[in-house]
Structures are given as C-alpha cells and as structure tokens.
Image (cartoon, one colour):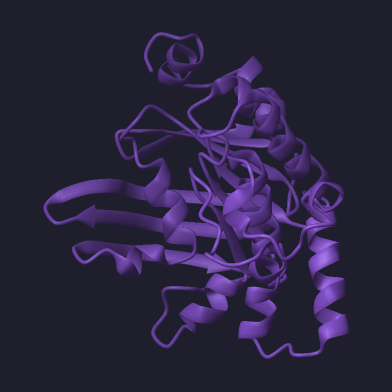
Length: 253
C-alpha cells in the first residue's frame, strides 16, 4: 500500500563511543498511522526513536551520521532549530514523569512556555487535551491537586495530555505501557488508536501482541540493523526474512 512519509531516514548510523548502535538505516515512517518498532533488547529500538527528536544530542558520546527528513527537511542539517523539531514531537517515556505541580499546571506548562497567558484560553486547552487523553472525567473536579496524587496509569495519560498541549505533529512512545497495569495499558492503546487520525504515532515495543493490536506499519530491528519494514498485515502474515519469521514465531526474544 502506498503511503505519504512523515519521517524519512537516510543512511542513518549511530554509535556510542566505540559501540555501534544503528547501522545504515533507511526507512520511511507513514503519516497519520501507528508505526511499531520491534526487536529484541539491545537492538537499537530506543536509539532510533531518540534520533527522531534529536534527544541523542544530550548523550555525550553519541555520534550520528546520515540524515532524517521531517516533512522533507533534514533535522540534522547545520542550523536546524532543535527546539522547533522537538516541539513537533510529543514523547511518552517508559515511566510517566509528571511535573511537580498541579494537574492543571502540568497541561498548561507547555502553552505558557510558548507565551500563552490568557486564562480562558488556558482553561480551554487544559480541558481539550485532558479529554483527548481520556482523563478529564476523572480529574475535572481536582485540577489543582498535585499530579503526584494520580495513579501511575493516570499519570501516563496526564503526560500524554501535556505533550499534546504544545500541538505536536508526531507522538513518540518509548515502551509507553511497560510500567502500567493491563487496564491502564489498554487505555493508552485506545488513545493511540483514536489519535492517529490527527497525529503520526511511532512506538517502541517489545510486546508482539501490542504491535499486532496497534500497528499499521512495523519496523523490525536486530543488532542495530533494519531487517524488515512493511505494512503490519503483511509483516505478520507474510514476513519476507527468515530472521523475522523466527522472531515473530517466538524463536528468540
């Protein structure tokens, strides 16, 4: 199936000191769909995800070569605005990290950082994105309560709302449900399925069942190399590579 790429990876290699993490990756991430990056531990999944929002810049010994195009513009080109790049991408980590402030202020933090001061507009933004994260009904009566009082699952949905409030184009999830109970995990998955009409979503997951449930497109990495990438239905039903067949068949983890 043809698709419009939102992110294009061109000959990307990443090393940490003397250790190579990714080797010559070429890949297109489809727009307004869910892409799952899968593979065994240590294969480069999180490194690839962090290359999209240039979080690798914060790793002292990381070296990146090649290019990544976001809407056709190379985010690693000299003079690229890293803050603008990161603003286009909301990130959900493995564990939620709400800011040490109220529920309301967590969601309002980004808009305020970018100059929003009107209280009525902030109220509307907070409600909108808490609703998008399916959290509004649970917290609307206690918006001034500390975010730390929420359950872990609620905190992850709050972090999703906080990320959406700066109006990104892309949502990145690095094992975003790994610290959650099954009910909270399903809530995050349902939000992803609902949000993909408005956002491109890229998740790293080690759970094949989750990739089968969510993904429209799948990328399989092994030892820093991209082994296979295709539409999810084709990937799971008719994998091209022997290594892919072995992995999805449970031959190794």
